[in-house]
Length: 342
Image 1 (cartoon, rainbow, N blue to C red):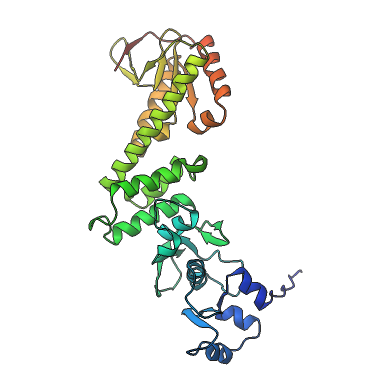
Image 2 (cartoon, rainbow, N blue to C red):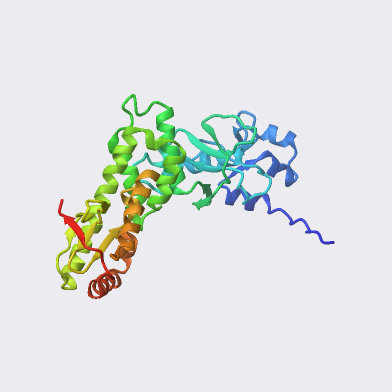
């Protein structure tokens, strides 16, 4: 039989410094501060103030944006008594994007509402500027300036849902330009804050892919990303002295049976290049259609080279070498195909 000796809680001063002077009632009690003292200190003109139910600021004056975020998180967290353990809640939506540093959304001081994600079974109400959003999935947290935030893809989806539910799209406060900017930052800045697959999964889970405005912005962004990757591959083709491949030809068998539309194709070598299928597959039906074409090409002897945009950016010489090797080796026993340029 074994047991864990409870650790001694850090001092009130240490905890206040870590949480930017925002403390819960439970944390104060754990350090010997009785409810009577809390009430006295929070009276008008006192040194403390109550920010949210059972959440206090150990100073006077207006709280900073970061302190408001701490208050929201501690209010919603499962156990405010255990400092550093706030897995019961994560900041999400536009507030999380502001913390991540998205330039497309208002800066942190301008954030007027804080969405906090909690497990569905939690009994918790909105309070002040804190809005509670529930999820049936296990919470994932990313530490941003010491605060627990939802992963970028989830935060983006919740921000879009926040704007949709609040009528920001309908009243013109949020337009397609903002949606495009948020998506672009999520996928492309600093090497990409999240993957296309992660973003599509979250938008699909939230039902946001059915929104024509969001779908249009996403399609536009993915098309631009694909075009950029294909242009870089074209540069590699020149650098490695390879023949210019066909772009997006339609492949059929002699009898007219449809095979696929690869991104690039060398008919003389029987080699196809497929670029990030996820960049053109928003729905599972589209993804299945693309995968089917890839499988048919491979079955008929076409050598298919799969190129990732991220890998292309990180290892262009390696990708160029793979393209040249594939062209030299060519396909194996390729069935005679009809090639129609588009």
